Image 1 (cartoon, rainbow, N blue to C red):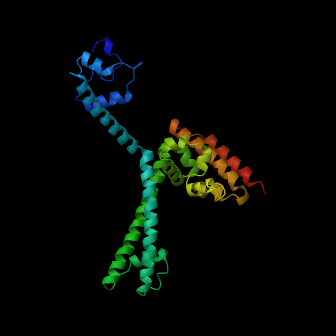
Image 2: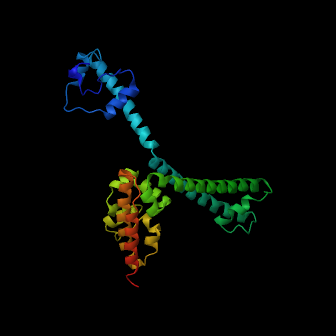
Image 3: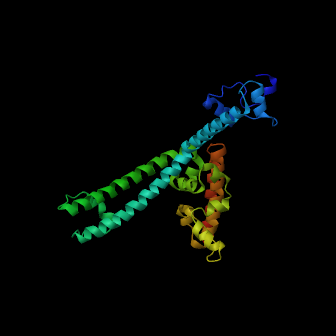
Length: 279
């Protein structure tokens, strides 16, 4: 291509090679807009403008497909799927366990008093066709709980690899929930701390905005020991302090990825002062 083609996304490319052309579209840039279809024809890249637009459409679709695949394959997106699946397993296993316990009582298993006793039933030899079906469901509950625990272990190993500060501050499971509620680590990093504070309390927040409830002080971060372990009168302050540092941790993890011990020490000191207010 001659100098007139400098900056064109198709400069020097074989447009039948969609993979290479897609990368050029995704990463290329030009100092100023030009009549690219005419330039492509003029320099012999395509025979006419209609061909240019057909090739551009195909390559743009290929570039979009690659971008989606890369996004969905990222560690933080995989953790979103993992934690959501873990919660689905938890909910479904608990619902099934309640059903199994109720069914077991009707078959005379008086020692199966609740969902926590289902594993004991799964270890027994059933007697009768209905008892066999109940036994099968009890074993399904046990397997679902095992799968849930395996997923939790995987999350605990994976999150510190791409979010060391968030994981250290909130723990891998809570970090994964925050990332899932935001959508991914980048979106979490861009949220203001006030939004991070109430992630997971959307229903309560909407009720407040409609004038039907007080403003929520916290969402899923209530499970953090720094919020849950603070006296009720000061939990709002603890939640704000934690959310502020979680926002900083998420930004560091997304934009640099290096571990910063000083932000964790600062949070510890801040929470200690809040919890000492009534001492």
